[in-house]
Length: 286
Image 1 (tube, rainbow, N blue to C red):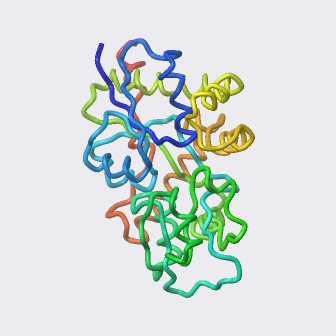
Image 2 (cartoon, rainbow, N blue to C red):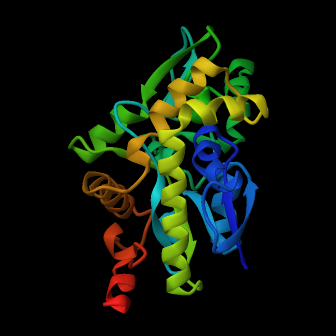
């Protein structure tokens, strides 16, 4: 069978959505070989066309659109929540405050740079951001992934990126954070099958979370306790992760438009034009 390389982050939502494939619950047409890396490393490797399928930040996608199609499943959106800009309690941020972000190509970095163009940015692994703020190395930092659930009592939230997103978008749309992209050089028939496998994996994971979540805990694949895992999965790996809907597509389009308006992209993309054309299978079989 053909080998397909899939890259995802080691974060609870990505592991949860992928594990149905890893455990052999889904997929008989390919040998799936997975790699787990932090999201900015995945973004950088996607720019190099490294993997057949990869988790990416939605903010990266316009930079890889020629090489990768968007996958309709395993998506994470913020809806009333998302990354947090944190600082030490009792401090005030200057216009050119120094901030730690999790990577130049992440969605949170894109939104942050639109709101705070004068901030001095350093990039760090997201696990090191809280420590950098506490030590005074930076004035503030944007927390992502499980870090948003709990942080040191000496820190407070300066701004919610969800609120910044609403301010920029000027309408209430889900905030696109993480998605999946598939290499365009794969045969279209393979691409459609892979997307189906991934969709089924996310659907099975969501339907069987009471079985799968304890398995992930037992294998020490998760950085948080059981209670926080359930909370985190409810935020980022839920029924809304199974298949991109029209409202989510509008959110992705808004992100791409804002990126163009703020001169981060050289053209505006419409997300639906970059999805895997699954209608090909119906047409071929008609």
